[in-house]
Amino acid sequence: MAIAVTAAVVVTLATTAGVYVGALLAALLLLAWMFSCAWAWLALFLGAVLLLPPLPASFGNSGAHPAVALAAFGLFAAAVFAGQWRMCESDIIAPLTLLTALLAVSVPMALLYSGTEVAVGSAVRVALFAVALFVLAYVVWGPARSLADCGYGPAKLLFGAGVASALFACVDFFYQLPAPAGYSPQYVWLSDRVLRRAQGTFYDAGALGNMCCFFLAMVAAAMFRSSGRKWNRWWIAAGAIPLVTALVFSYSRASAVTALLSVAALLWLRRNEVRWGRTSLAVAGCTAAAVVAATLLVPGLWERWFQHARQSLELAFSASDTVLSGRVSSWRLLLGFIADHPLRALAGVGYKTLPYSEVAGQPVIADNTYLSTLIETGAAGLAALLALHAAILRTAYRAARSADATTAFYGSWVFAFWSGEVAQMAAADLLTYWRLLPVFFFVIGLTILKLKRTGA
Image 1 (tube, one colour):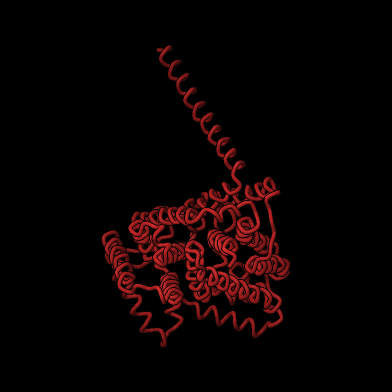
Image 2 (cartoon, helix red, strand yellow; image 1 turned 90 degrees about the horizontal axis):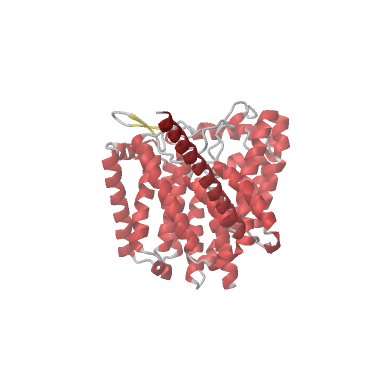
């Protein structure tokens, strides 16, 4: 008996030691790969923001996320590969840098009007927003410039991660999995039950819907020009089904409208190349598959969707605040604040202070990027945001008109999606999606690289 117990203890210790040793070796190999490849940390970071949920640890209002540690490692990688940085003129980096700087400058105003706790939160959110700027600079100026020769590879890897995230969101909605830390309490009231809206690995359903729009714009862009020859149409069509389904499960009307606007912008951009029969069949097929999937998984959801849409149309002119989920009341409150305190609004009251303080008389969620940017960062901040929009659309349009198929693909993707973003920012504060912004600006960075390589 003693011998058996001793043997069991030895085996257990050996197994435990083996697990630790294996984990250590895996970590060392991962570090070696990250130091041998300038963009390795970037691949891990982008995968983390799309696929990993927040940690179950209290941090601010949302919970800590593993991607923050990878972003910090990116700063270290930037120093390690410092010799590979080559700065040059960029139409997009300049306004994004200016916007980030103005967000940072507004932090003292948050301290003045809202106190230390809110000001600390403001500074943290500025730092999170700055990650997008760092990713863009790392791609355009930094060691990741070699990705200019990678063709469609980065897009395919991102698409795979996006589809996997959407699939998890569908499972999350069907099984109503425990929400990650700091989630937004958003629900769908069906006739027989109340369900939490799908949010997948994100903090809220709106971020999930925005991610689905991003990759659906990619699917649409891949269907045009010779770029379609480099993609397996069946593969991207199959990937579009969980993206559309997750978008439906997110129950985000703003994201659904954004997806439609993105496709409309792409059709306008490629109006001379559209094969309407094939395009109509592709859209109808993906939509039908998503409808069948949603109906089988959650009976009654589509009925609720259509009922909600019908009510929105009926109440559009008689009760606009009801249709817009109370947004009109928030906008009236903020417009009244601007009228009563024009100097405060022009100078800014501090980035991301409106929802967490009573600087406007009461805590208020603006649900409007332009209005919140004006009040929180002043007229200069709003001007920088508009300049950023113009620079992104101008650069994307140039790339989309390129004779190079890869450059045209990335340009079409960015132009279509950002056209929808410009519109959606009127009904949501998209600057708070700090996990998605680096993904967006990574693709924007690739577009700039492709454009520079072709000399357009």
